[in-house]
Length: 225
Image (cartoon, rainbow, N blue to C red; front, side):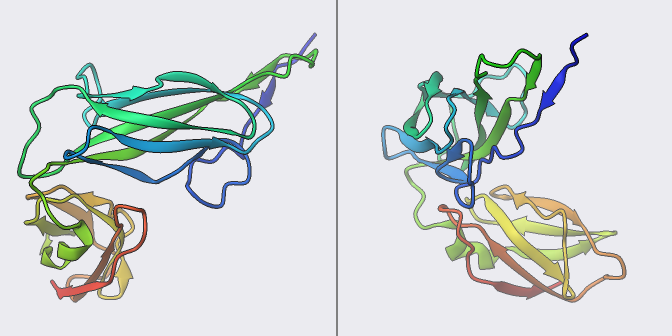
């Protein structure tokens, strides 16, 4: 009897740095500048085996709703030591002109079999989702320049952050009273978000850093709650 052998590809990594093997995506987010015809992102395979790469864009709600963007190529083979460029193009859609819009860019890497083993193997495809942020043509500046405009206040056992800017604020770190908020992710433009307060913290100084368009860490901002 043959047994099913699980081949877990733990080395497949989708960060823009530190990856030693597998498919490497050239960024942690993609900003689509509406003043340009397209936006692009590199995909590299430093491994010695080929991968089948599948790409698509979806809405934050998921489901059957179609995102107004297409990715080319949508399906391709990426041989070992090779790289390719994904091109994202807007395909219609009535998007706000006064604030950013958020979508998800999906990149799935399916490893190829070597065809030499006599055992059954289970090869696992790894999918990465990175933020695709559409920035309307009328917006100027970048998020980290106006991140200091965020305001914070306690709301029960949570902290409420209000974002009066037209930009998505993606947090690198947030702390209240010197303790980090572990679930602080992002706050949408012209909106607010709630994050759970650390145990024993009711108020105090707030500090936060946001992630730039290029995945770097912006300056620290401080306030009170």
